[in-house]
Length: 142
Image (cartoon, rainbow, N blue to C red; front, side, top):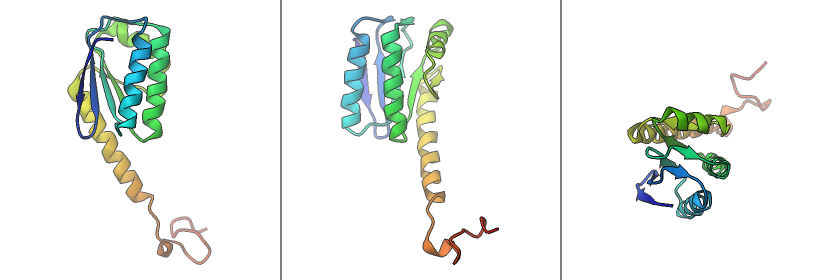
């Protein structure tokens, strides 16, 4: 697989330089993503701008990568402005997939996801004083 990798503090950007996501593409992409996960990258932006087609193995690999990102509260963003390619991705039924037309929008989505995770973690933190004697929070009391 021909690609360019850029590592940033909050995400890794993989610029795919292939016009077809077939053959060894899926295996190479899975190997690369696993290495990035081991390095602590849970937000991946995969730029498919020149790519026109992807096979079933490629879709399956994207499903795995998406699941791994989600499990770590990260985000996988697929970038393409090719309507036919985007239709292939949608038909692949990748759960909660984020497909955007530009890398810049993908970067914004990563930052928004991180902010949502931070705010969500803060609002879920309850102290013992938040609970009454009956074990309910003040808003849950019958």
